Length: 339
Length: 180
Image (cartoon, rainbow over all chains, first blue to last red):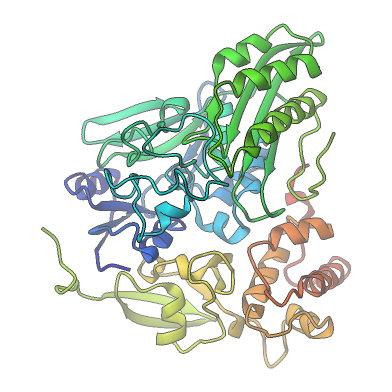
């Protein structure tokens, strides 16, 4: 690890003041990704601002009937919170599909959003990488691409976002509340993470020094009609090759509202509101699900090693919508896929 | 701008309770909890495996929760209560999980074992695992390259069964079981 300064912030304002003036400063909470990246030399912060003492730990009801997850609420704590399990079981399930219990115990809600890609070349400081070193080139393109993007990639970067939790948060239409030098603002989840374009060094739309305060969930509307399916190279403790978060609201046997988000396939959770809208009014069934899968994957392009992801994602979407319609969510410990 | 690598910031005083004993320690910001336990406190039971949060050999309990000590900066654990594998036996009596690991031959080379044992103790206290599949899932952060997994699960299952009957320490709380 490089040598760095360390300060423990005692207020949100103090944290922002400490970090905002120095582009090489980093906030640290769980540290499960940042410390790892520092050991590889991928991150070399000048200053770590420890935010673990800030009052952002709570999980609270919001006035509209939703739930506010403090940025420092632990991943385990959120996954096992009685209100989350009762009202947002999709979120609980997605969190438990990711990492290990040790990592979930340390990792925080805000930190989960800010995880960096697990692209092998991003981690390998001996190779060029536009995300790590803007302008140096992309070693993944033409390289080993099993884990890389099939949607929304650019000539500069084909990395994917590694989070499971974020796929559920995208499907649930969460809002990210942040604070910076110019005060607070709320970012719809779909606008938080970015596609790589020609600036893959920017994973998200936070400004320098901005800090996540909370992730707010709107009131639940899907009851038991949800699922999170994660497909990976090991049955547990591996990043998604493809994952699907699906949620349906059914009325009189027809789809009244649909949510569908993919993980492991793009630089951010992949969601298309128009595809979800086109499911509205449809009878839940194979025909509608196949059409939705085709539309959500429109334009998908493999890089060679990851060509299989396109068909894998198509099948996973159909399976997930079927589970959601049946109200039979995928178990994250009994791994056999429900039909 | 800031301190360069040759102009090291001063060490920082922290207080750490390890296995019931309180220590005043001077740490550098980049010292991990794992390195402080092993190198400063000479508690070498906790193992350094991958040192990147991927293998679980460094698992310890911090304020009751199992974490990877290789990814924790010691300076951020000021005031914490840490339990390592050395702190599990009481009055010369092995912890039930330790006994069960011996009974079930749940290790071969033994390098992952302290992490497995700390993880298993926490798993039982958490109370989220009931079935074998759930134990496997909740232990997936501890890799064993000898492949003793089947015996490790047997050992944990046995202790969970005994505690369910006897209500001994760390009995599982069925009300907190994972919803399915």
